[in-house]
Length: 266
Image 1 (cartoon, rainbow, N blue to C red):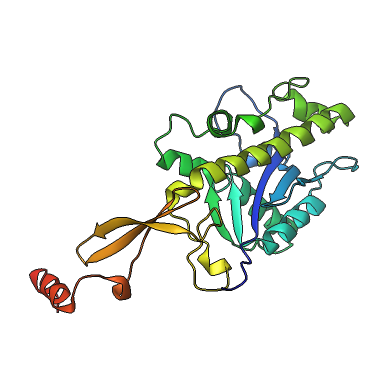
Image 2 (image 1 turned 90 degrees about the vertical axis):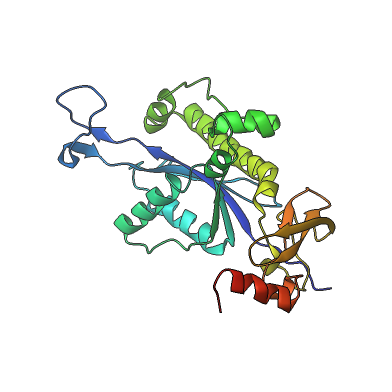
């Protein structure tokens, strides 16, 4: 049996500075780019490696220009470069495009592209009533439920951080880190429902479940228009796995050929 190396799984979450714009009227309409006074930038990022206790945190706190996010973006880029698997909450629509955009503006090169699992999108695939992190953590991981930054509610937290309020920054760090812990916990809870295979990250020939287990039990068969295949369940987390490919097809060659002829294949 080969040594189990396992993937380097990184969960991350960013918080951004809002745009500051000049506008002629209030409302939800778009403001022209030439009315932007201060551009959006990354205020901070929290990140955690699977299997480690420490939650990393990088921010622009203490800088003369809080919107100069080059060091923070470089830190994110360095972490993502080491990751085999990335986990985010709404990161495919928000975090990653913004990080890549900041990389391009700052001229520091594009992000690496590890396998990316977005718990927001995964939750939608499960038909849950909400894909928001507050709902997901309350449902799957109440011990790391999303924080509400009570001392500085709403946008006040960002305003006070930009004014250099140290208490606000402390609350921002706690809020950002808790989002990462919550996202990681939600991923661990719902990943078994997505047939995620981590075998490629391990030496040896066992199939490795997303939970790290290599122990499976037979769970009947799956049929499609190509053949018959064995089904299995993980003994630890109950994830499903179905064998695939011609080598695992349990139908005889004659039966497979007959199926092809019925479909008009050669």
